Image 1 (spheres, rainbow, N blue to C red):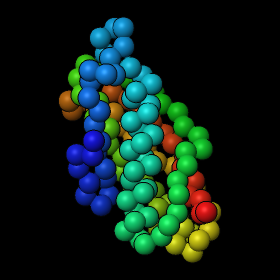
Image 2 (cartoon, rainbow, N blue to C red):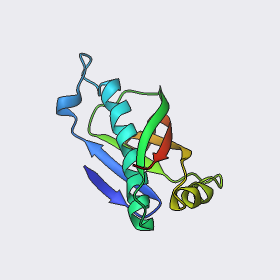
Image 3 (cartoon, one colour):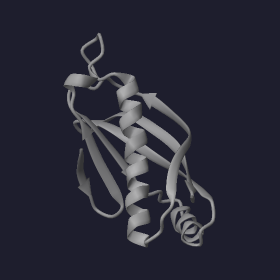
Length: 125
């Protein structure tokens, strides 16, 4: 579920119950998946705001797990602060293929439990 979006950062959650592994913590695959969806959804919202009809695909991703998640899975994805987003959106707005790296973090309380790095490509039909 989307729980917050401020134009720059999207926060999504997934229920813990269906995503529990045999150790009683959040399944790593579920964490990876919600991170992938958070990045995709953030780009989808930005495309809508810009009035473009691009589609996003995840081309490459990795995740580092730091600590177990023992409750609701909460993922936050923010726009990159390295100056890559504006040129990316200009290319997308011009109907050109473009790619961007996004970082999504799984939060457990105030700690980062996992960090996902995904490279998304904007495509057009």
